[in-house]
Length: 277
Image 1: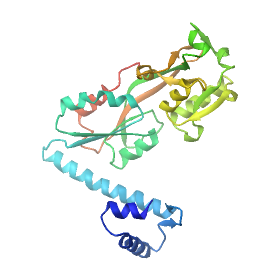
Image 2: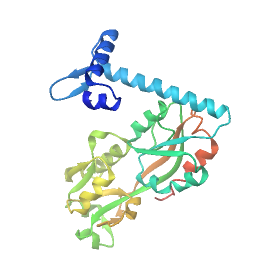
Image 3: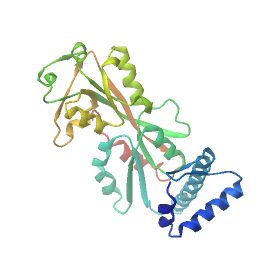
Image 4: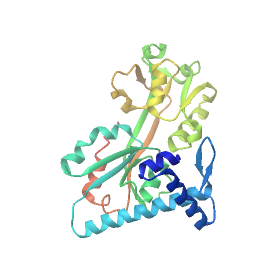
């Protein structure tokens, strides 16, 4: 979204890049960008054209991988998308099996990862369960338990047992309602069920932000059990009587992807998350 940086990346002069884009717009008969003195952004037509082009280029890459697989050549790289930050801690399983391959990990929400699997930009995706996964394949790994994260200075950290009523006097930190991912919908429904929506004081987009706010003493929030292993954490995880948050987690792949469809790759992927983490 910046003509100067784009020109530098492809190593041509900015006027030349602008001329190429204008020629493409004339050929298509529509504007691809909205340009102003402050910013550049894609039009709806531009977004569509971009997504189609990314898909075409991904198909070229996928075709190359299929050709290598048919010829019996080894895997060159594995691209992993994950909603589960702890996945990065178990890369030795892949490296031990395939020491010569390159591994790239990116994080995102379940919707983004599914789109990456469909267009070939991602080989394996660690995602939450979804109602309709289309042509992709999904294997359940575990159910993550969410516990109440409270700062060590919070009065609740000293209680042996916490009840729902104990939460009514606390400020709650929740995941962003605007994201509308599986996790956000799940928690919003639970807060409404237990009449805790009015206690939500802050919202955030990811688990790391949530536990950071909790650690700063700004409120309490439900976080997955794997956060207990975070270094230098300043919060405790507590079970709440009457609330049982468990969210499914699994690995997805495209059945047409020769890299991810191999049984040994899928088996390793299934081992990346231990039950109860």
